[in-house]
Length: 218
Image 1: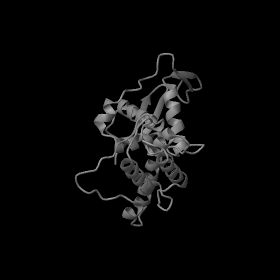
Image 2 (image 1 turned 45 degrees about the horizontal axis):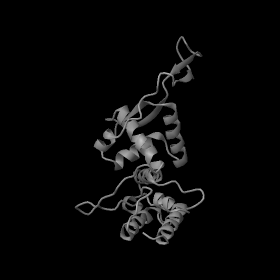
Image 3 (image 1 turned 120 degrees about the horizontal axis):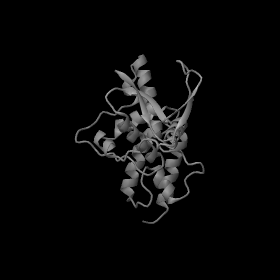
Image 4 (image 1 turned 120 degrees about the vertical axis):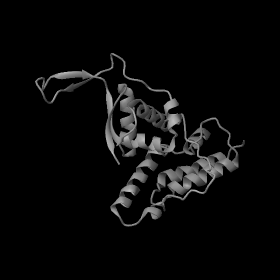
């Protein structure tokens, strides 16, 4: 696959928020953009509001490392550097990163719909052929699961809105029990600690979320 280095001009705060999210997930900005591009239709990404370029007063200072001006400070637009497949443009990637930040804040989410035809489940076992490529694919899957998953709540699940957040549902919604069970089963297959992609803390909070929602009337 041909890869390309992209420079994405963006506001300083946007850059810092993306890098902070990447640091929490143990990935890089390119992994976050790829994860969104994997699950969100490209037309939806292009329709998403563009966070935009930095304002004229928003500049970062770097020290030039070569040329006749070596050692001198240079004020430039804040930016993110990502390396990924060729064929995109910086604005589309900036929008994809904005979607990832909105997902991390619980402001938006991805709705999974059943396909007309059965889709083969992609699991570590289905790609485990003992090759280096399989190991790399498993690492990539783990990174994507981490990027797209909810941040475990520091104090656990205590309120109805926190329970909805853990299940990937917007606050204030009133889903019925069948919807909650279906969402729980889907997420449990990903986060159950017995699986290669599992996470004990996320699974524990999924269970807590269901207990909170079961105990409240609709």
